[in-house]
Length: 381
Ligand code: GDD
Ligand code: MN
Image 1 (cartoon, helix red, strand yellow):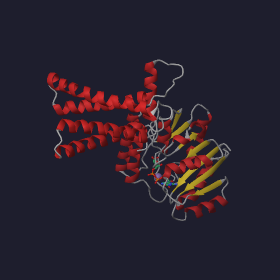
Image 2 (cartoon, rainbow, N blue to C red):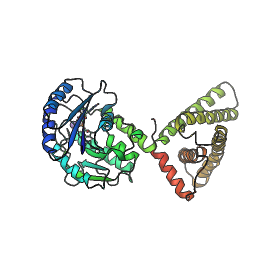
Image 3 (spheres, helix red, strand yellow):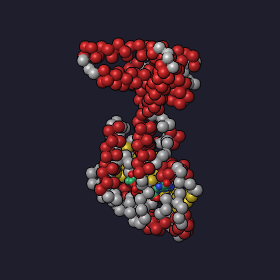
Image 4 (cartoon, helix red, strand yellow):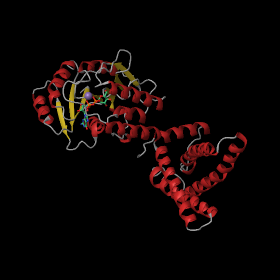
């Protein structure tokens, strides 16, 4: 088997026969199979079985009883079941012309790319099949935002959101994928450095039926983007924000109960520092605890850092206000942002540093590498 063609479907009954007809015609000279990963609630599975019986290439069907995993997980499941390592993903509604399959396959066969992407935005490609002006705008904006957030990894990718691509399954780290929502290609590209090639194509109108994209998919996409880009950092930020609220609440409660405000501030600060540490241990750095020093050592580092930070931040703020004449609010915001980044870097590189490092690469290099690894590691947001 040279090529496994994976088709995620959700209520695509009127498109199945035409899809198989065009796919078989296009793959006459390729040893290929088709795998439908179907979550339909209509008669799509029956239609697939019927069409499979008379198809000129092997057609398999996996029917799942729930749509919960969505398009992305359907693709991952199809890839796991594929006979061939070369896995081509194509939508079931014929917006992706099957006639391009041999072109993608030929490009892939040259052997210098882990993934060949059918791009709407590469020279010669078009996105005219998008339902309306709004979809075009949303698609373009999302693509631009995504590329801006991954300037290095997506340097050569004009269409990270396309649903039409051919990937070498061995090059993808299936265990690291968090296949929520529609954007499974982005997930693969962001998690690992893949060698990419692109082939332009014209995104057609739907053959029949309607799009399953929704506002909900859009929201999925935004959380996916955040989790991909910031990984632990976004969770770290959420916990930090929570700590700030608790801090205020404690000060408010204690002063209302007549406790002196300085004492109240100290109690609130120490309580949040301890609480934050426990939350970080449990939710953000749980996967790094094992390799790091003992819990007391971690606590000591975290605790002293946070206390030192609080002590240093206030005079720096005063300095900003007094000598640079920056407004107190701006100065607070500025120092909080800087403190946040420094705190994150300190925790991931010092508090949770692995106990033993092997041969020492240059410190600067290790710093950058670890920071990058941190930023790319999956977050559970
Ligand atoms: N198994 C499964 N489960 N399939 C699904 C699900 C699901 O929950 N949701 C959608 N699909 C299938 C559809 O049946 C179709 O075959 C394919 O996934 C794409 O869904 P559409 O509803 O046609 O989405 P679209 O046309 O708006 O967007 C597509 O094209 C864009 C541009 O290439 C998707 O592929 C997007 O990811 C892509 O960005
Ligand atoms: Mn579609």
